Image 1: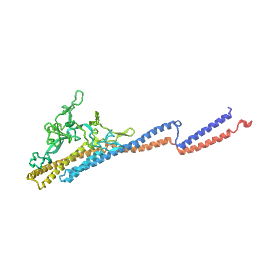
Image 2 (image 1 turned 45 degrees about the vertical axis):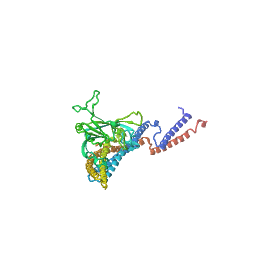
Image 3 (image 1 turned 120 degrees about the vertical axis):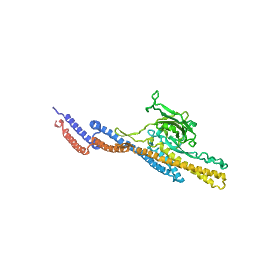
Image 4 (image 1 turned 90 degrees about the vertical axis):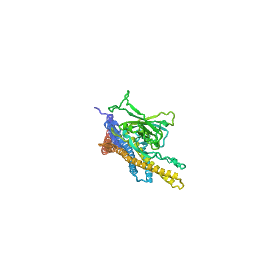
Length: 516
């Protein structure tokens, strides 16, 4: 076979180019620190790198964003619940103090002021938010748990479900003496016929006070499902549960009415100002074992820090400032916000206000405030009467009437003090139950094996930290060039490249023309 100069030249150039290409690859590995710069150089390394990077990106999302966000959300929740628990402890202390008969008027005033502040702070904690999202309101993270200001433009129809076990016995003092009944110009006309007396009543307390009545286009509807002799729900022809509506409701003008806490036979007195249903004894006998009593009522006036009904009940709300406004219907649902904290692993991070911050907390505090205010009010009446008796210009009729007033007021004071003490004693148990609810929720318990939600997230975070390191090592092993080995190979390839250039200089410098 004849070897021409062109053939030798081509071979030399091919060898030089191949060596130069190999040297270039090594130089690129040395410069970038990577084994390959494009998938075609090593498809296996490229495919493995894509998978590892995808997994690492997901891990980083969980570890650097989702988990810190979940922990922060639960930190805010736990902090708020912890504060509420501390406040309830203070309320419990006030209950113990209020149950004592050794309190002075100043002591009562101090407890009264503290209770009002405690209630306000509890519900302010309910509007805690994380990154602009309210943590206790389920999916409605843009709506606070409470009204941020007094609201009168929203008309709510609220459906509240209670049971016979919610009926409590309460003690009330009736026939309180009104100072306006005393006429100094005609003192003998003052009537003492209706003496103060204590009565007991069966009460279903609604979650709100200051409700609408029939007089202002509102009404209360009480319904309960019918059951057959076997205890099963009765159903209508469409298969829906059949309800019976109670018709013996009596709307009282005010809870101060003498008959407010003395319902007639077969009747229920509705006290709109206090949000109470006072049940007759015969009705109580029929209802005490009922497991579901549905009560629908209207409310259109809310104070600052009142709980918003849509977070707690099925309800309809209409904006009265808009003509022909369609009502918005809310259905109470279990609204769990879940964060994905690992591959196929999610955890609920939110606690709903309806599970932790109950209306009963505020209503219990309201009972104590009302009871202690009633005692302070009658003490003020006594003080005013005693000051009037100090007047040296009083007639005999005036003195006689004022002394009678003082005697009646002291009877009223004794009864209301006993009522206050009973209210505080009952509140001790109710507050303790609320603390139990808070303590369970504050622990964010899942089950005995997994521990708390917070601990689960922390354990997952720790595991992801280890996995993150492992994936980064795998990615490095797959993509990164061994610099020591690369330097050695590059030096070796450089020697080969220079040798090929040297050989080429010896081969191509002679040609056939040199011998002609």
